[in-house]
Length: 369
Image 1 (spheres, one colour):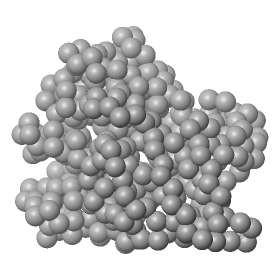
Image 2 (cartoon, one colour):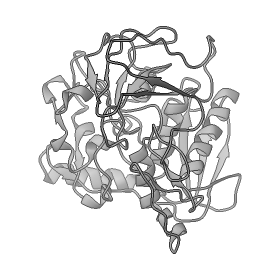
Image 3 (cartoon, helix red, strand yellow):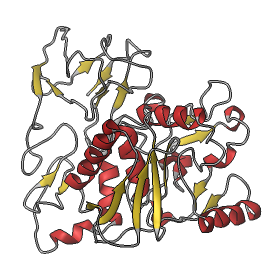
């Protein structure tokens, strides 16, 4: 997982693993006391209650202090990503006693939701990828990690024998079903643990009940369902009351422009009826096997403050299916997709994230869509 690898490594290197909840969450005294109380009265496999509070409809004031220029630009890009797809707004050096202060400090971490007064987010120089910063901002907005949802046992199995001693509490789950807000569980959520996070032996701590997603837990950017969760939590859809449109292919109304739809990856157009906008290449599938080389981005050793993305659509003849296999990846690759990766979406429902490949798991199986 692009994000959890960077966060976990940075916080471990700074000796912060024992002082942060779930690896990167700063708990208030009230939150910690609530957790301790639940932990003392329940078994480890039972749930703890939801703790986060939203910031409401007013812009969230923040101030930036001693973070590096690169991380500062990445942080502002992260805020823009959330503002473009939700009704949440941020204001730098804005008024109010309830506010966020961003420091370099040590490690990558954030408080969860609005806790009152000044609260901090730590973004050290090594918290440099856009995915890491967007991840911390989603915590700031009030969301805990996905695999702590009350319904997680229907999707993943926690392998306790592989968890490093002292990290067992990082695999608790929440009892308050309103935490899901009706949003489906998703392996590819930005806030989902990777499969080996907090492992004592390099073996998985989480086993995906859908084997295709074993190496595709977590993400580098908010998923479609991550966005829907924030929009629901902050009542953003109230912006479009009285304006009715019919979105296609799983799209939902764009809370920043109620005449348009926000589309899942792979679709675009006002009503999500067409191809995605931006970089796009379309291939016509044939009965015989074809080989295609695709590329995105540029050959550079400098980490950018945003990601380059491109969509590739493979279209079969009428009444046919597409069969596809990923043979190899080259360039800025890593085992955790921290620099680049490829996502394959084969399901009729385009809303969930697809199966991700980075480098070490290739060639892939044959996928049929």
